[in-house]
Amino acid sequence: MTSPLIQSKLDAIVETLRNSSSKVVLLFMSLSFTKLFLSEMENYNITGKQWLGSESWITQADLASVERKYMLQGAMGFALPQASIPGLGEFLLSLKPSDEPQSDIIKAYWEKFFDCSFSPSNTSAVCTGKEDLRTVSSDYTDVTHFRPENNVYKAVYLVAYALHTLLECRNGSNPTTGKPCVNKNDVQPKLVLEHIKYVNFTTQNGAKVFFDENGDSVAQYDLVNWQMKEDGSAEIVNIGHYDTSFPEAETFKLKENIKIVWGANSNEVLRSVCREPCPPGTRKAINKFKPVCCFDCFGCPEGTISNQTNSPECLICPPKFWPNEKKDRCRPKPIEYLSYKEVMGTLLTGFSCVGVFLSLLTLMIFLAHKETPIVKANNSELSFLLLFSLTLCFLCSLTFIGRPSEWSCMLRHTAFGINFVLCISCVLCKTIVVLMAFRATLPGSNVMKWFGPTQQRLSVLAFTLIQVVICVLWLTISPPFPKMNMKYYKEKIILECAVGSAVGFWAVLSYIGLLALLCFILAFLARKLPDSFNEAKLITFSMLIFCAVWITFIPAYVSSPGKFTVAVEIFAILASSFGLLACIFFPKCFIIIFNPEENSKKHMMGKTPTRNL
Image (cartoon, rainbow, N blue to C red):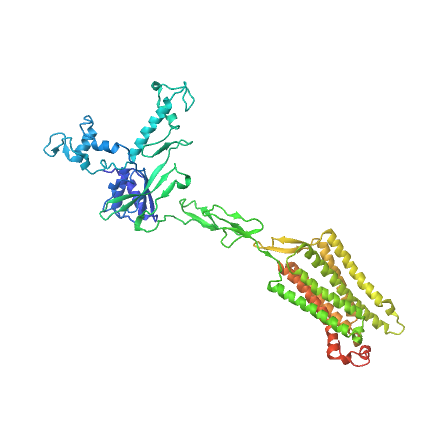
């Protein structure tokens, strides 16, 4: 009869199992409670569970029955290892009541095995004491292997070896401990317990017995599997072992080519988890309102990774690294710069080459017609020098493309600054020449002698030398240098040229802007001169384009990210260079090639009608 308290606990456990989605159940009970529990489970027909049993019941095949065939199918658990004890089987099977006439236990077992009685009775036969135990099939007579008995066997030998170690005496001292010898009459349980830790032996059936530095004995277990038969009986199959006396890699090992039956007749290992493990790239967060096996998985924040399953936290990648898409490892950040191989770099390179080609083509046309009036007008030397400087401007844009280095960073900014000043200086001198030429046509004017070819060359040289001095100071104090920008983009590195001294950079641009503004003002003042001097109108238009390009360049340069900053700078160089080339030289080339009749001194002097250049 089960007590109400125990029955209420069993009912609560069974009810929990009925409502639970868990597939794996650990049944850690004594044999008597296991019998009660399984009897209770039969009433509810709960199947489909993978039972893990404790050593108290996992080898008790008599728990199996037809009703429990599907419930206990595939049960597993660690059991005390099977072992044969030399001589014990023969002793047990040859034992008779006459050998131990005072033992009531032997008489009770004898009467049970042979269904007889040593006391005369009308209901049962009389036991003679000569019956043969080998004819009976029971747990007692199954002496092939022992489990709990083997532990008793080892324990007896353990105490014997401990006593031997305790009582061993050589030259007045114990050779194991170095302490004075102990007389057998002084043996105490405490002394025996102290000497057990020195014991290390192997039994006749091969079991190792010793204790480690923590006082723990060798843990030896068999992993057994219940494989139910059609008649409801259970075959308990040994499928592996656990032995701490083996090397760590072999402590737990399953037998090879062994059939394993899982619960619920499944062909695969059953999983019983509230939540699947958090994969790499996520972190594990415990939910305090749920059991410890029920947790949440959160993706790692930006810039962090987790490279382990169920990682409690995410790791920050080093500055030059960034997580991959799965966020399970850090990879080097890609380095971005304007390359010749990409589309934008190829297009800008193509436009630069086209500009160089057009500049050289114009130069060849002017050289071929250098004796014509339209080329000689306004000092042909300035035209040739301007075309040369425009060629250099187109070429210097190429220095902005490619991987930045110390030399390329210094070259691109200084070459750009000096070439553009040389170009603007030529345009400025041409504008001054236009104004001087108009003044020279007035009666009594002798102004051209103050700004002849020599003064023009010196002016261009002086304007350019000022920019050279600014660039030299810039390179000396704080030159441009390659820099890895990791702030604008988190996931990649921008390799760019830092300007070094911001004062030097803006001084170069400001000086170019100052000359361009001065040139624009002078050309604007000369825009209403007679048609023969209408080159001032072309210069005015070209400088208008030039100033518009560089005014819009400043906000675009500041706000553009990464390689687009360099692309904006190249675009500004190319646009302003094409503007100067197209506005100043293309109309003259058109006249030279397609209207050579207008390329005469009369047209240049305004004595015949002429078209605007």
